[in-house]
Image (cartoon, rainbow, N blue to C red; front, top):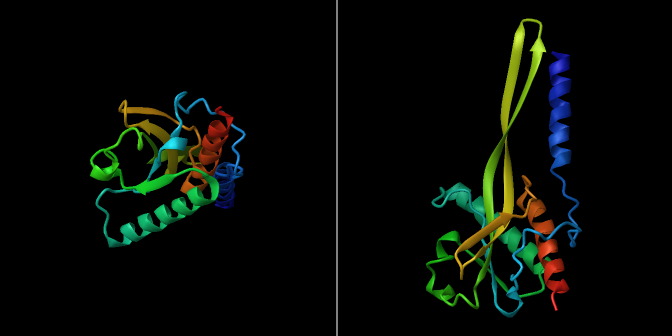
Length: 178
């Protein structure tokens, strides 16, 4: 029993430590996932509000709103250009965003759960344990061409920890443009 508790503690710590991304304002990582013609500096970057369910109950709505507000604060701190937070339902249907030149680019988040498996041999047979870890990752969507680009490759259970290096990479990319 002690072995199981110790092993579970070690796996939990490994999971927690592996979720850290370094969190600086500059990513220091590849920008290969950013489209070559990405340049929202003269328009407005739309940033999708966080959501798990499109029609959440009252409690989940509060959580989603809080996370979206935290994302907005992170954008205000890290992104020096114009942006607007937008609900996923408004990205292609909102008349406010009909101008696809001005509102061409969208930073979208995806929420998923990564299943992890662990098994070990015990004295009376094999025991397996499964658990899910939430993952948030961002990608860029081009509204003008209706193309979703590959994700940033920076998944994290904490959306702000996924967002910081993503925004850092975008800002580095834009600053490198002439």
